[in-house]
Length: 265
Ligand code: NAD
Image (tube, rainbow, N blue to C red; front, side):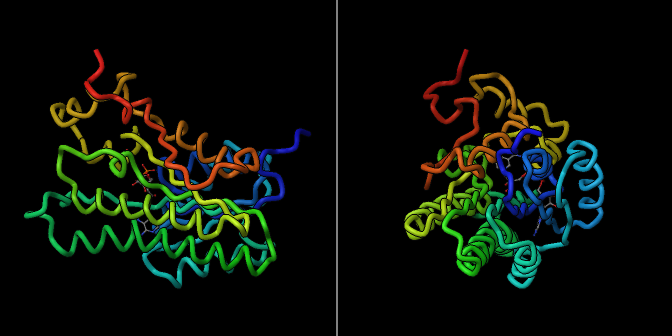
């Protein structure tokens, strides 16, 4: 049998029951990693696990744990779980929310701001912190941490979602600093910056609002939303040793969107 691209690696994925998280789980499992799928929703995790097992039938360890990334004790519990497998090699800090009541500077409530930042920013901090502690504890000199930011960390959003945009900017800045601080230990940190995707997070938010949808679609040089699997392929690369010299990257999976000055014809 072919040696997988993630053979002998233990991985934790947060938000593993959602669009990008589930596609990444399947790719990681197919490439020989042991995967702990974590998510705040137990029901979604159960469904996701069944789907992942079906799509990656030759998986090794593929298990689930309910984790709210905004709670440090939960994130620590996930890392402790994988410490029993021999320690974390790959941490994909992917869980995030974009709240329906997120708005502009005037209309975003403090409650929505704090909720968004507790999940999107603190969750990534906790995941990074405990991954580093696990890597050190197990004497590893090779680890990959991938943090999900967004293209709104690279370019502004003309439609207001201030708490989300600020949170993803924080993820990008935090990832860069972590990448430099831990580079000599062999721990790589990269930020995934997806463009708007065909996943529940965005598609439920857009709903049937054709005008809202069109405002986004016109900016895609490719003329379409991205797919979660297209992000997962990027994450697989960053997680693998093929990306051994990729560190501190703003890894945009955006069909070229952030490189355009005017809208494409
Ligand atoms: P999704 O909504 O399909 O999945 C997100 C998952 O995170 C869900 O399963 C949800 O239950 C889980 N989650 C929510 N709060 C959590 C918490 N407190 N603790 C643990 N899990 C929690 O969304 P997705 O599109 O797969 O998004 C994944 C990441 O990609 C997010 O960080 C999102 O901000 C980012 N992103 C998405 C898009 C897009 O267009 N979909 C674009 C750019 C960035």
